[in-house]
Image 1 (cartoon, rainbow, N blue to C red):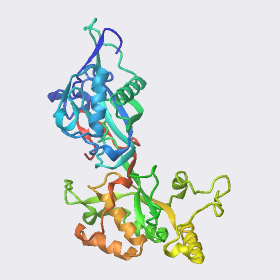
Image 2 (tube, rainbow, N blue to C red):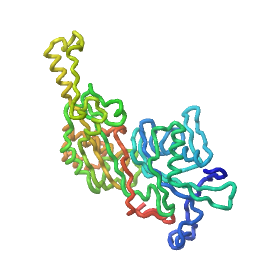
Image 3 (cartoon, rainbow, N blue to C red):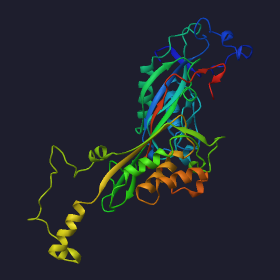
Image 4 (spheres, rainbow, N blue to C red):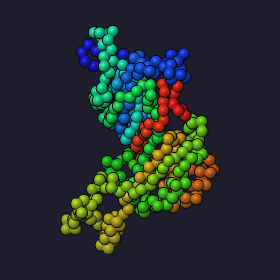
Length: 384
């Protein structure tokens, strides 16, 4: 804030009791937003989930939401309460609270997680006058500044939009979520490189996954179904019915090749010839020239490929995407068929599902707001 200005803790946008349920009677309904409501901002956030204990704030753990709230609190000058710092090193903010659209587990990444925050600007010099709200670009720049200053370089706000606090809620206005899961397929002697460590699921295999069959199996999961077979035991949702709009299984080698030193670049494979200088250990199978040649050829032709699985739905159950990915990989390696996936869905029992995919390969790719889901601060969301 500029000199002489300060921010106080925002008030929740709740209409008077007598006006609830009647939009026409709500304050500001005929003349714009009520003056008492603070400005609301939609923040779009990216993060590397490797060192976070998930998205949602926790009192004694480092989380994405906690770090963002702490940065915003520092921006507006709100007080911060340090919780058990000697044991955890975590500083929890009590000055600014945000509302997220989705929650991700520890180790899950995000290209576009969203949350909203209410910030009210108050002038110390002129307490009877209300200064103009912060611009969206100011909020984004300030949040990133204080995130970086606190050492949180694995999370950043990539976009910020000022929204109507009477008509927008980060969670209840969202119309869909898209998740992408990345899989690296290679032999054990060629694991993911340093830039992909913790960012993909390494499936150790000498043959590629059967992507076409995986797609046919994925088609069985599209539509409205009871996904009890793809619902973790800790799920708190009242209903297991979800509608999956789309699932796509594709080869994703272009992304992997960007981090592969042996990938073809500029039309060449850039093979090195060290035959005149290489010194080979005189032991084991490499002592024989033919065996050495065959071993070299085997390593050179070893499978190294990537697969991306992308799913979109209005909402997902707890661990639903990771359970679906684990099942589709079982299809890709030949342990299941598309018919088996259909049968698993009909069993409505997660105990029959294959091993769940690890968190490291999952990305919250996008939270969608197409305007079709209306939200009213006095009445809540349609269907919420």
